[in-house]
Length: 255
Length: 265
Image (cartoon, rainbow over the protein chains, first blue to last red):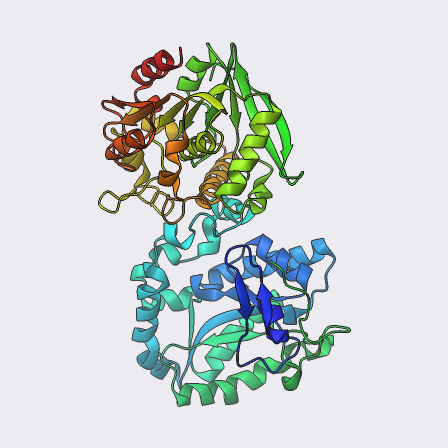
């Protein structure tokens, strides 16, 4: 329904759960009929298949410790792509990572460690598993994955009391100088074939943003250039290329 | 389990939902409607199966191998129509029904919507009503460690241990846990976040003789709800089962079987 209201003036909705006579969002997105779509997940294979079948991007949340969980999730996505006969276009796999940059590793830790600890301990670390995995929220195939191998949850079981050192070691946070951050992101990036990185920065100031955009990002951007893939999940105005015959990510949405 | 079970399937909902019905026992037909976690065949059903042929329909989505049937069920009214169709197709109109917790709510809704559907109604600690001063516990978001105390008078007793026993094989264990969580999510569609879909307005339509059985120490839904059901169903009475929590037929099988079988006889 979101996709339709992005592109239509006013829509009468007969949604199964709640009917609305008129759905009219404003402002409307610049991209028409709608912007590219990324669906965020934590590794459920059904979510991955949904994205691949619909031509959406899949965005992985690295909060559970990308170093301990990332590779298994990324591999699972590309296995699903192979199984469904889809391209292994790295731009389709996104990755949300908490990143903190300062001039030096020491300075970054001094600036950000306590905020990173606060965020992980008080936010996701304080949500009990029975609420995080509330019945009805995770597909049965995802549940089987989780119960067979709880590794997808990384350091979540001890996150409520996790120190900065533990969070950094697991990859829940990447913190350091531009060179350190570059190297650590690239460690995940290349073998995993994911491309877009969404940066989540607790207490990010202008200094962090400048350092990341000037000294980290330029090194990451061209990494897949030599493979010749087009980025179908990026706004056209910023260089994204619509899927054949339609604007970027313009498949019908009905789920 | 001593009962040999077979399965019947009924295509319902314009062929969008196939209801699997587990069948076992000897004697006249009796319908059993399972609780929120899905159908588990227990010693109480084994004993009933010595006198009746039990037909136990599985709520859409809770049948192993067919999880997405729940996507065809939007609400309580869909559910009532699907169950009514399944029971009618199986020729079960006029049979008695025994129903537990979530199943009790479904049985009460069916008996209210179709007063001739059941000859007798046995509700074992049914959900479906709500009092702000005695809220029903939220089993859907409960931690696994909380559930034994929510469901059993003796959370460490043999009945509780048997109820939460899981297969030793890791794959079978993972599948069983996933199925249980999925079942609670599927049935939760009709009882999340508050298990009250207006049943109190419809209970007066039940005309079949009704027995309301309640564990005296039910911590999930207080025994005060027994009177709430009784006062709304004309031809009904209450039996409280001592030393039992939310699942009296499992925790005090003999006592519960005696009162239920005497009522059905």
